[in-house]
Image 1 (tube, rainbow, N blue to C red):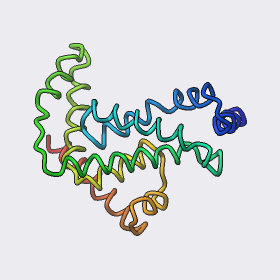
Image 2 (tube, one colour):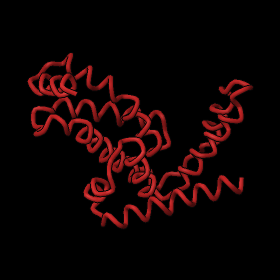
Image 3 (tube, rainbow, N blue to C red):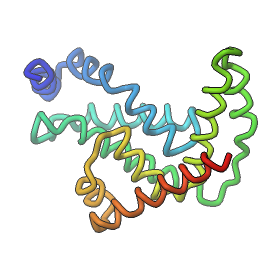
Length: 176
């Protein structure tokens, strides 16, 4: 933990190697979060890239070193929300991407891959705000209070929406 905080301090002082190390440690979490929110790997990569550029430019203004991960996820979640607004009037065909994912799975992993695809499809069927809540909790590790603050919601509302969304997904999985 001390090494982590020292890397953040060095990054705040402009050390690009320290920032790159921090980024390397959380890239997968950032990308996974963005993919689950946006449903589009290319857009997810773009949002993560934009987030990193913005974070690097603004890291000197980060107040508390221990808040780095939450701070960069907040930047990413805001970018993802903006991107979701762009999607509002678009109809996107996902069957081709899903077919590619299934085709890439080995024969022995096909059942697990199909289940993974089914979970992702159910996740994508949720309301965008419910997806954001679940992704912020599961992938970014935010608490209900932190999510409520970021989304300008009541903490109890966040918990109940997350619970209902997860129950809906589980019910659909059990029926499938």
